[in-house]
Length: 126
View (cartoon, rainbow, N blue to C red):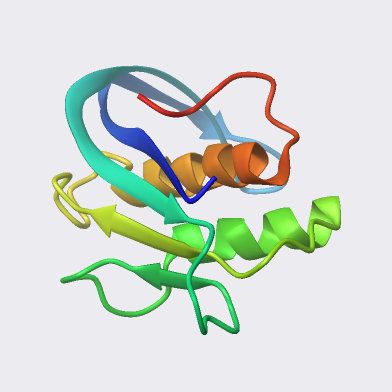
């Protein structure tokens, strides 16, 4: 296994209801959302010569990356000690557009890590 691929689909909120403040100052929230065909492509390469740590490549996106955090958390929580991987994200979902692009990429990273580690019950490849 060298390359795994999946889509990270955008979402839109169809409605959002915010309730009155609770005792802790927070609000109950109810939302209805739907996924779109608009998606980022996420590819994981599990055999990168010379790679010493996991790497996330997402051209045009600077700073903290939710997909990188998800991959790190997956390793910490599952104990997976597989070779370092390169995660490449081709962005189509607008950054900071309210369409959950970063969250979708993080979920895609978790699906691919699960498959790469052998703990996936179903294939993520398309």
